[in-house]
Image (tube, rainbow, N blue to C red; front, side):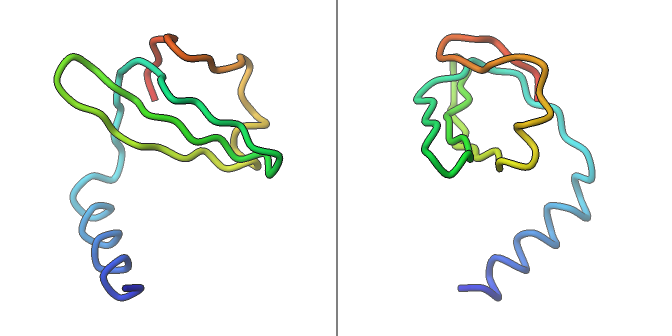
Length: 71
């Protein structure tokens, strides 16, 4: 499984070095670990996301369900 993840990461990063995605936050979970888990959705699809504690501490806003974001 780890070799598949490494291959997927390599392919994605080589073809999409920088990606911006716009959507609405839903299913936001903020467990005690400090990591955030959420679904980013638009009218046609959903993308499950994780934002790790060392990154989310730098945000200048608090995410919430229903908030439209560009990430």
